[in-house]
Structure formats: C-alpha cells, structure tokens
Image (tube, rainbow, N blue to C red; front, top):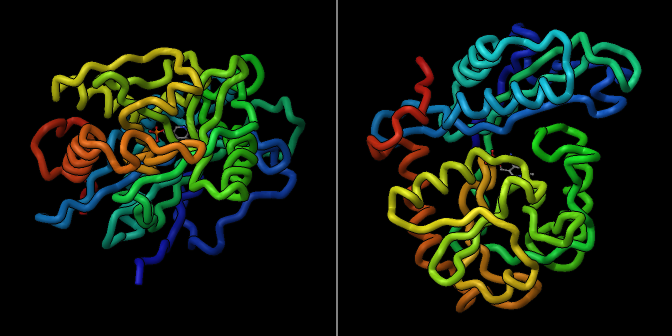
Length: 305
Ligand code: PMP
C-alpha cells in the first residue's frame, strides 16, 4: 500500500493532514484567489534519498504569480522553500511524492482583497500515469483556453483550472484520455495540466509562451535536455491540423511527467506508437529527476533526513 500523508504545513505550523482547515468565506474559497505549485520529490533508488526537482524555478513562478495577483503581504520565497522541505521531511515518504504549495487570500473579504495571505504545503503520494509507457489519446476540445487579457494562464491560479476541468470532462465523455485546448486565436495551447511537444520534420516544436500556456518548468527542462542532445527545437504558434501530421507528440508537466501521445482526434500520431525521440527524452527526464545521472545537480534539492 502507498504511504499516507501525515501532516500539512499551514502558515508555518505542522497540522495533522485530516485536520487542516480554512473558513468557507475566505477569499480563496469564495473566489478562488490562490496561486499554487505542483512539485515533485523523487526517490533516488541507490541511496533512498529524496530530491525536490527544480524547487527554485517553482518558487520563482509562484513569486511571479503573487506579484501579478497583487498580494500585499506575500510570504518570502525562503519561508516557502523551508515549508516545502519540511512537508517532505515530516511526511517521511517512502516513494515518490507530490507536493502542493499554495499561497492564498485566507481572510474573509471581497473578491478584490489583496491580503492577508496564508499558505500551506502538502506532500502526498501520487502514482505514475497508467499510460506512461503506452501513450495517451487526445481530443481537441471545443472549450477555449483562457487568455492573458482575462485570466492570465501564466499565473498558476487555482481558479484557472475551472476551464481545464470542463475540457477534461468533455474529453473523458468523448472517450479520450485527455483534452488538448486551442486558444482564442484557434492555435494549439496545451492540455488541462501539461504542455505539449510535437516532432515535425525531425524537429521538436512546442507552442510558444504567447500561446496562452502555463510557463511550464518541465517544458523548460525538456527544451534544455533536447538542446544538450543536439535536437533542434522551435517555440512557435502551432496549428490544429499540425497535430494530425506530426511524426511524434508528447505531453510534459511535473505531475504528468513526460508521456507519449499516440492519437489526436482518433487519428494516429506517426505510426500510432510512442516515438523514438519521445522515448529518449522520457528516459533523460527520468534520470535527471531521480538523480541517476550527475547532470544538472543544480535542479535537485536534497531533502535532509
Ligand atoms: N500547464 C498546466 C495548465 C498545468 O497545470 C501544468 C502543471 N503545473 C503544466 C502546464 C506543466 O507545468 P510544470 O511543468 O511547471 O509542472
């Protein structure tokens, strides 16, 4: 059986997991005013030690989110960093762990409240996707991606997930594993919880940062690893019909990791099986997150025992 979450760090206090509370009229509960990060801690198989993957980049992104959301008393990134490491330590996972760090307007107030803020960090088990090896089928959603001028996707805000949720429910109802969402210009954006990569004419292609995506840490990891492998990559606008003619496709995200896409709108991607470039990148990602390579030690923050 998977290990169980024991505690949650809430405003610097360690609270039994089942007893964590916020008021139902808090601004985060009433209006969804919160920013969060999904982070992973991986267990190194040789040493049994845990590493938090790209913690600094996740902290930087939540910092940007708090700024754009105009929080007036944000916790320091040092406080949040310590909260993350403490949540892993105090939950004593024995397998890979998923961490949710969230800063929210915890006071009771109006939708325009800018504080006071509160924060929590949870560390829970999370299994790898069942489609990790075999690949996913995607369906292009009729729901439209949220836009920078309305609900900025660059901010990892709790409320943003309402739109992705609708797309995800539609995709399931239509028999797909996952949705792929187009933006208001009809260009490919991302999936409800991961970014998208394609291989076209032997080159990696991913929707640009102006395609209403979340500026994904994993996307950056993939671009860096691809560069080191000598693979050419383009960040650009992507048309819907390109999805039907590419050689390979995969999704990437902290929670979703790197998973092949084998069909879009029931058309096979390439030969309908996970592609060779995808599998090479998946393997490279696995070794860098887990620390079975010495490369990119700066991306792995060890959790002290
Ligand atoms: N897009 C969305 C909408 C997401 O929720 C996530 C998961 N955080 C991603 C992309 C991937 O981002 P990251 O690689 O930073 O986890």
